[in-house]
Image (cartoon, rainbow, N blue to C red; front, side, top):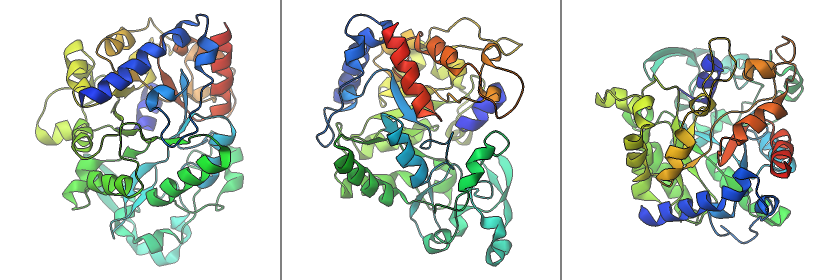
Length: 391
């Protein structure tokens, strides 16, 4: 299960020490103590800076760029996220092409995020596959060469919530991960500060069974561009713990395990016959285990503050404190401005494309002590952080 599905249904020791220092260093910012505002200011200009601890706290992560305003996983979305103040850009969700290139798409099925359906030459590629146990119909990146994918253009994925984004349909092509790494360096030079990215390996078990393993391809590109070190400005994430464990053997980058709903099972667990659920992973024992190969977790917001039956927020869990106790940072997902994605008490009206009281929601989540958050609206997140630190 990916970030959207979770939201829409429920609305190495050295590196651990490094991230542990980041967690401790965030204390003032989290509590709003004197000096907290200064904690949000430093931005390392040198390549790689001083690692994750150089990021402001709470860290504002542009979810697929600035997907609240532009079609996701496009350079238009990535650039705007930086313009709006994102500390890190989630560029991108990595899926392979038939000829082994990594491209940035939310899912391997691209019928909802590109104009592929309007290309008659690809009509015969439409098919049904079983993706992580779920029959899925559409067009899949692994059935296209990179050259073929480059003839497509990105479109808005959720037009009912973001009709204004459809203005930009067809403007941008699908970026490759290699292009993203080059873009990162270019933007770092142009903006005079280190640009950070936060790519995700998507459905790694599925692709490994197809002979298109993701981790080795990611590691090869990171090594090629000198971005495979513990202080490199590239944080890697995955919903499958085994993918993070593989990456831990291949690179020294900061690594984050993504966590879906409490009753869900990572798909690599399903394939391996491991009966544990996410609820097992967020126990003190599970967190200690993850801290052995990762530096952070990316839980759904509902794992931080569950919702009541009416959609309002309940009491926070102990996840933040428990994770910090074993040196893990927390970057939950996903804050969005539109009503349907907010807790019930922060909605304004019922229009699916109207904004609710997102600043109030940000304030509540920041108060739990999270180290950062994924958001589709980086500018909103930056303002909310400034309010929180000033308060």
